Amino acid sequence: MRVIMVGDIVGSVGRKALKEVLPVLKRNLQPTFIVVNAENAAAGRGITRAIATEILEYGAHAITLGNHTWDQKDTVDWIGSESKVIRPANFPEGCPGNGSVVIKNGQYELLVVNMQGRSFLPPIDCPFHKIDQILEPYKKKTMPILLDFHAEATAEKLAMAWYLDGRVSAVIGTHTHVQTNDERVLPNGTAVLTDVGMTGPLNGILGVERSPIIQKFLTQMPTRFTVDEGIWQFHATVIDIDPKTGLAKSIKKIRYHETDLWMT
Image (cartoon, rainbow, N blue to C red; front, side, top):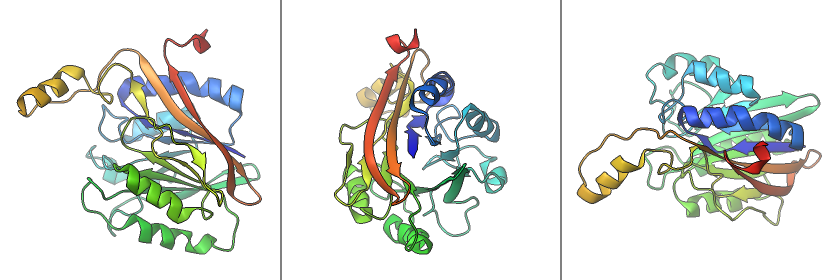
């Protein structure tokens, strides 16, 4: 069983990259499931229903979000009716939408969970206690489980991975937009990558136009950030899972630029 997790989609450039690369990955890697973090898909802030539909049509089986979940004002109106789009499960009680979903492909099933960290991010319910609640019904099953842990601090992501080692298939970090080089399978069978990176503009700063950010550092004055244009980069990871045990066998990074020779 093979799962591809795609790093944060940023704006129209990120969506273009997803549209171009997914057919290649599907042909070459033949994944069972594709999960996409798209919390920056709508001009860098949040997601719209139309964009969610677009990403699912490209081949994603589920879409995860993060701290920008509510940045598009109409998200609250539709997120509860789109089961394949999930927001962090540790948002406070009463928030619309769901924090996990079981997706199916033939004989295979995958529980996808979205969680948000608390270090250097707005106050939110404890992700460690919340994941325990979500996993309770699966304690006696061998369900493959993927956690998108949308968090700022590497330490918090690693702590979560070690906390869940042997209980989930993979803990994949999102949010920082910088792909890390620490992918591994922990001793009890949980794959971890502290940040899968981003899919969006290559030559911006974390997907945003360079000049306003540089000006912000120079002057400390408020500036308006705009998603960059130009060529894209595509970041993802591929995890092989034993469906009989629900544990990971391997994890590898995926990293492409629009100008790579693989396109020809």
